[in-house]
Length: 469
Ligand code: NAD
Image: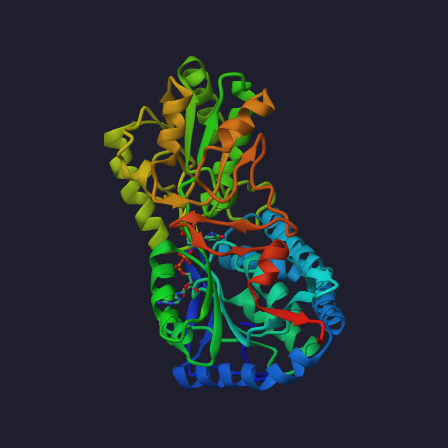
């Protein structure tokens, strides 16, 4: 078994204990992950704090060069990273490769941004400019659905802006982050990036740590609330990228079969474990039957298998807890709706759920109200556009959503009335590092990506100068 190490103050070190990492396609352990204790957590924060003066004193161009070098090192080993990602996360190898290549792309996109002072006013009387400086030590906490790219969304801007980082992956998908640590150890000055792992027990201490200036968190809304509370004591900066219950609204001029294919894709990618996955679909009465039938056909035809097997389109769900939660949701869905494909775990080892389509489901069923985070899609009928907009917005979440229809302007009009951070029209998951991404309502606070995402890792200072009289 590979010997994975934590990265603390530039040194690759053992943890104080270790936990098994389970391959979700088999349900069996395949590696050990070193786990830190609170003393090592403090050392990691101290390492990041010690590295901060020299790292923040470098020019933006110097830091961009090193971020670019990290991207090159990751690209050179993309195949190894993708394979490991499939083994710990479960996603099919082509999707894992896409995540790794996307991660390289994100790092390069941030390396290409700049932080020049912004001149707000410059006239005969004086000059007002806004300058940006780094915050200090950033805690970067990531979930188990996209462990690599979600870390890059944080590392890229944090490092470019001159911060140093303590990263903590989810305990069920720590290995790709630890492998990345070996690249950081070679490419970056000691202490600029530190990586610790836990057994879901160090998040509280990390987010409350007085030397941590900012917490960049992606995960569930429930944990996000704890992060916000822990950060309050020292008024840390926080960005929260949390859960979603994204609606797809299919308009009556959409092609039912073609759109069903795209909605299926948007619901099932990464076995539905995507913050912005399509989690409920609203379809006009007139095309409801044909739309549902096409979704069911695609669900039955999908190749569900170990992500390492060639041709696998949908892998297992990532962990046993999620698997058990989905089983509960399926049980309730059988009572509150009509299951037309799937509907149960698959009879094989590992955490496989058959791709499931549920039609005519009660709007108050848990599958509709909650974030299912699995390959299970409820399909609801509507008669009136005003009504469907209200139903789409009737959620405590507000992450993203999609609108589908041939008349793009009408679709944009509907999209502009959806209360979320992003709405895609006739496409899904068009996430671009140059565009800001943020959640509304309980789906998040602040944003990631784009220039705005970079600014979240800085303190802006207004310099307001008058010409000497
Ligand atoms: P989770 O909230 O259980 O865990 C996320 C991370 O937080 C893990 O690293 C975990 O160890 C850590 N953690 C646990 N307790 C903590 C605490 N008290 N303080 C600080 N950190 C703590 O989330 P998950 O189940 O790993 O991920 C799935 C969730 O993430 C879904 O809700 C999904 O929608 C969301 N997500 C959101 C986005 C987005 O960009 N909005 C992206 C991906 C996933």
